[in-house]
Length: 530
Image 1 (cartoon, helix red, strand yellow):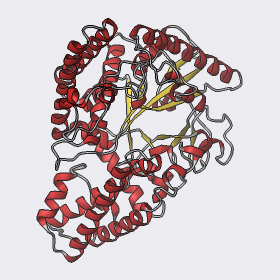
Image 2 (image 1 turned 180 degrees about the horizontal axis):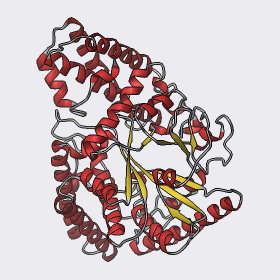
Image 3 (image 1 turned 180 degrees about the vertical axis):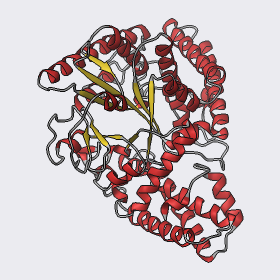
Image 4 (image 1 turned 90 degrees about the vertical axis):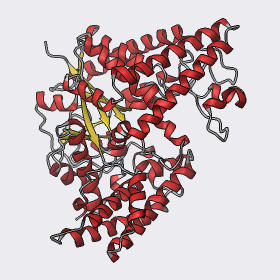
């Protein structure tokens, strides 16, 4: 019997490109190591378990190009190995330190077992190649992997430099082919940010669908017949799926959503800030800067500094309850929609993948329980992917979506305000220069290898400067100094290379140093800028 409708879960996995070979250790590289330990390894284990058990489910995962590259970078793999070994060693010390407190000792044992399992999975099960592990799940048919813009650039703010937009999309498509041996069918537009000029570029790259925030569909022209609950086709031919805020907010909101439950583990209370620097010396940077270790003994408890100790059983019970509630809420929502529609609706629920495990420690367990309940305990909806829905259902609506993003107030405010607007004149000048110089050499029959290398590196520096993560970090104030320095450094390296290419006088030592620092997209085609 056909279901009343469909639910498409989308996990958007992306981190900014952070790789610093010039330092033996670099604090911001921990963003990747924490995400591997707390999100990517648990998700792989959970998804593989579902597939091995024959659970008939499908979901969509974005693996952004910077994340894929970092996961496969030998230097970062080696440094992650060191990070894991230090984490396991700290957990062993904690087992000894807490031996006189039964509840703490049990939690220390839990962390040691968990980190040891992470190390085993990383080394033996996935052979240090998480991109291949996700690719295998795609081959098994349980997930669909989609791409993103090359460096998660905020595309609407490049609209006047169409070659830059095109390069962000086409370089990402080429990278996906290298990673997964096929073309991507869908794309996650960075920050769900859309303007009408993107339509033609997506069609040229043969990207069949993307996700918009709900108002991007609802304020489109003409108004959509089925609101956000069926896809709409844009004039150039790609399909747009509207994000369902109701289901999203239920999961991600710390105030209204499940992660704020007092039974769950508290994110901020970490032994890296609670214990003495002397005790933590081996787990902290050389200068003694305090940082998260991942070992957290307290639950959320409530709005109080006096947190109670974490109880894993209570937390898993809460995850089970919330998974059942989410299933019931989606079933009721989809049954209500179907009663008022003459086609099967689709509810699209996208989330940052790092919510599951990193920010919300029990998130992978919630997902596992929800998927199993959705498959076995109800028949109102079926789990699917946007690609599968398009293949199985006729969609006749044609619509010009509205400019929009999923940021605060739904437009560009997060990425363009008093804290970060200074970057755009510089980014625009660099984009203009990249196109100008690419056109000069595109028309030449023979371009020397050193000039080609310099043009490729110029493109890398521009792409990395354009990452929306830097503007976001400037706006939020977290890592603002680092985000500012990264933007300036990439632009300065770009400008120096531009001057050298124009003069056809390349400082090969400087070029080699740039390539050593930022080695993303080794096969990048600079001609996309021409």
